[in-house]
Image (tube, rainbow, N blue to C red):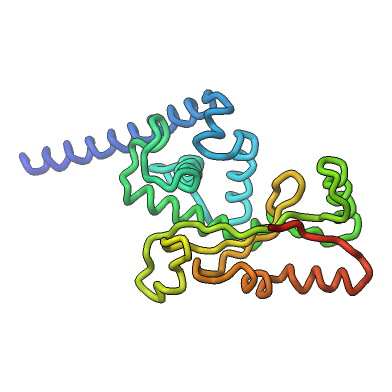
Length: 232
């Protein structure tokens, strides 16, 4: 009987803790919704409207799901904060109840979902039609007095932990391990193309010659459409 009472008490405590967690997460989402817009952007690099759209896209187009313990929105907020800061530092009111191991799992799940082809093609698109390119050209001309430009291109080094294999391919000329990531953006800084396949030791010119954008731009010029990407 004593053992039975202990088991019953342990079960009741477990149920109470799960309910308390769910209550805490409900409180968390309420506090996030009340967070000033600028503070929200500072923590997560997205405004609230875009965050809600992102959560909806993840729910509709990917297998990412929340649970009773960790709702989907908490997973996404946790991952966004990590991507914004590169740190597992917990945000009061959002992820202070998560262990680092759980946080790491949330980040991995969300990042995998963000790489779903449907989401990638929806959010990252290089202009495919003459009309799309003309609109971007007009904006570059209007805002910066730059004729014929349909995008800005550059590479940037994203620091990573020292890899266990092929370390030399990731050690850059600045003295640390990285990915050398090529990006093309439009007049509003919207990313239209990204190439994150190469380690930090790879030269920018090699990344450009290996990208899908290079033959596409060449094709446009050969077809008589003289448009340019602006780079250093």
